[in-house]
Amino acid sequence: MSISLIGRSIGESVTLKLNETFAILKAKGEPVIHLGGGEPKSKAPIDALTAITAHLNSGEVRYAPVDGSVEMKKAIIRYTMDHYHRQVEPENIIASSGAKQALMVALQAILNPQDEVIYPAPYWVSYPEMVKLCGAIPVPVLPEDGSFTPRLSDIERNVTSYTKAIIINSPNNPTGAVYPASLISEIVDFCERKSIYLIMDDIYHQLTFNGVKAVNVFDHVKDFSENSKLIIINGVSKAYAMTGFRIGWGIANKRLIKVMANIQGHQTSGPSILLQKAAIGAISGVQSSIESLRTTLENNRSVMIQRLKAFEGVRLIEPDGTFYAFADFSAYEKDSTKLSKLLLDKVRVLAMPGVEFGLDGHLRLSYCGSIKDITEGIERMKWAIDPNSSNELYIGERKLVRDWV
Image (cartoon, rainbow, N blue to C red; front, side, top):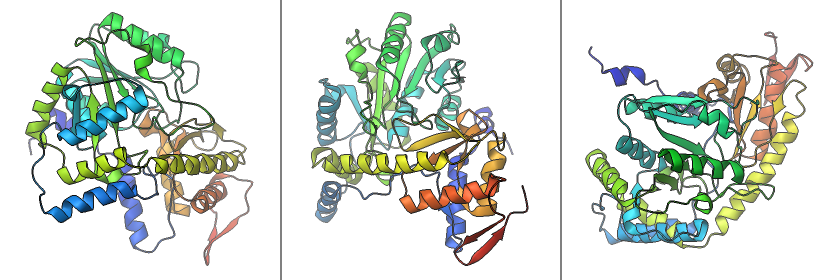
């Protein structure tokens, strides 16, 4: 069989594959615990459900404009004013089938084969594959100081004449790091001086803790002209707990948005009008669900941090945002894929291997589930890998004997 060069270069999503394995085990009745999840467990806002139901009952479920409905764009304009304090015009906006599609069409609009895209590591698993889908070259940058927050010097050292864009994801998936204003200011200034696209993946920007706030990139922008190379990506998946609704958006200069819309038009056409109605309902409705989710996550975060600190060998830089902790388990096992498999096979706990996010020896653990799952899941993990744990563990009525340490 003949497969394209790009097709051969793209690997399957390990996170999605592990989720599939988890679903199969759960369907078989296995007592599995998911600590790798990327979606909040709270319900979508009632205003979103009311809006989608009303439109569904009308029976008028038709094609939407390629770049999003007029009503959807008005909601995004309001959102941008509320959270970024910046007035944008409808022509600066594209609504897409998820933030992932908005990012993908942005990359397709700006990249040529052999262009390079820089992003700090650890990174979201899809960044390198999305760049490769454009025939371009992903360039992950791991901070030299061992932290999860890069310095401008880390990025500058990797810039070449082929560098087309820098992707910044703060709060960061998988680490939960929230980059300081000083860094964002330096990166904005650097990109404007070097005429490099700056893509801000802000999907988690409302989910921060301990008084820490995500930086508003517009506070540091000097070039507000139509030559601006700033692209902001956002959506309703995380803060509104609407992962399955698949509505996201991009904000950029008008010419670039037009090109992105042309590309999207030949990919999927406009995002579902039904799902746009739900997103409009969420953005325009009562916003209390966001604070409720954030408070729940902050409490869950505290529980997870406390439990992880019970591991003598685990090192953790405490997250300030998202709903992930990226913990260093290399004292127990340097191969994170092997460790992830052991935990799923032996104690039925799913944790995402850090190597998929650009840093081996770590596991990405999610605290967006229940307190019960967090406490029991980490208890099982500790039993599985800590040689000082007792030799036996009960999961329900099943007795396990550790014979692999």
